[in-house]
Image 1 (cartoon, rainbow, N blue to C red):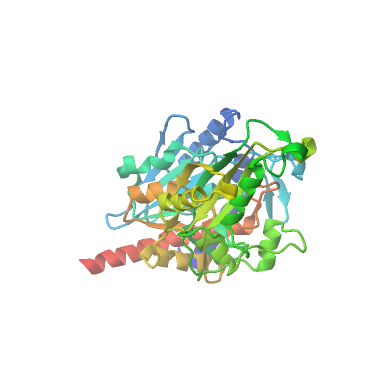
Image 2 (tube, helix red, strand yellow):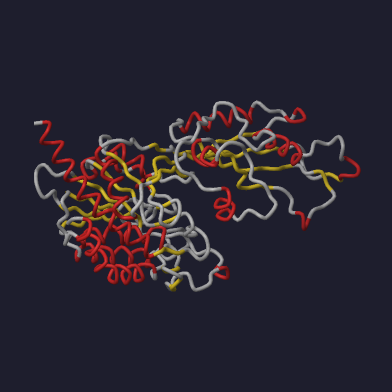
Length: 455
């Protein structure tokens, strides 16, 4: 199909894709502890049926302990010289959170201007449907071989993250499209080329056997909370930049938000400045960030006039995509262990850590994706990174080390993923389906031409 025929084909599919997206988004497929497993299985079964209807004849599942089933589908390459593309998305969703903050029930898809609102409708059910749209556009016979991986417990975390390298033949491919993200802003085609790594560290202080009267003992008795706060204050310099030695930071050369866009997206109060220096891309993607995500200390409402004997904080570290995760975590741990605020030692406990990822650019799949994104949105693609992590990307990349990894999809940074009133725009869904179709067309043609030239 040329560009005009392709767009006409996708336009003819949109009513059906929208209807299936509504069906899928109405299922509360939350794979978190404490939530029922039946809706997750219901979403699984619906997708298995939709894949079969789209022409996927070989459909299997992987059942690992303590996780939802992983759907595997496969369409063989149409010719011996055709490449194979792996398509990834997940069908589980985040919990809805406080439903009072939603404008409509989170699992009753409701219309918004240009799209639909529901929990998980952008992250990641829109991208599941986009994959299906590509298969339908080619009547189940795309010009490439296809391997489909639809995961059922991505949001909570799953042992599947580490599974692909143990069974590499299942995931062998020439390129993969990881559709668990989307555009910097609506209408701006975007390739994500980097994912920051993540790590957690707990730091705690114990100074007294129990609280002591602040009037009688304050001023000499070591206040655990003051000790902890003094330690935490060393993590950033006067500008708000991370001050821990050895954490990698580089200039960011890609596209980024405007400051007004970022302030709006982050919900920054009027008059409150952003922290840190340098470009937003450096602060968000190619440099480190340390956030205090939890603090154990007496609550103000019930505070007694007493010296605090114990305090604890949980830190979240995000680091450069190419920095080794153990090294990055060790730098933070070493920094904290070197401190003795008021001559008091800290107890520092490293927690979970996960690697970042930086995609290789410039290969045939990358070039095909740039062409496809421009065809779909009518403008050249931008590239960004993200501070969020997709742990499975590294597992898939290890299983298929020669495959190019492409990250694009139907979400956009203004879709409220993981927040109340999540929404997806039909324009983004349509363009993503067009892009996926154009990508497999362009990639197949370029791959065959490259194979012929090497003979």
